[in-house]
Image (cartoon, rainbow, N blue to C red; front, side, top):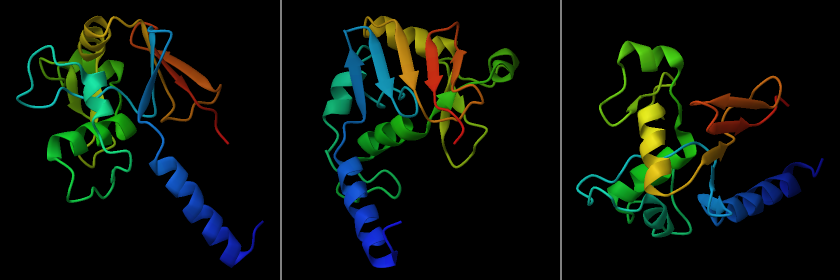
Length: 158
């Protein structure tokens, strides 16, 4: 549409805009909006550390994949999980593949994680929220509900 030279410039400029968008948002103090999913707590952080406040400490221009060397590893992990994590499938919930914290390895591989009902329960309770709205997976009807209808995935195919 823009031609090869202009198309590359437009692509680069748009990526710079995306690099500066926040990783998450909270609507009406009730709905957590994120591209991928909820992040695990940062290792060695206090048990009730506010993960949403921690997300705000991540550099506005984060190197998600590959990460920038100047960023602290725990915050790189958190940013990556916000982008790439998914809800765990019911089979993962039932088979015990998830850890005691409700997180587990994603079937997608690549070191990504998934979150189960326990992880979502804890996150929503800790932050006094009711729902998560995310967009990382395409669904035939444009929306999918999971985790006892507390996690909405909104994204159509094409």
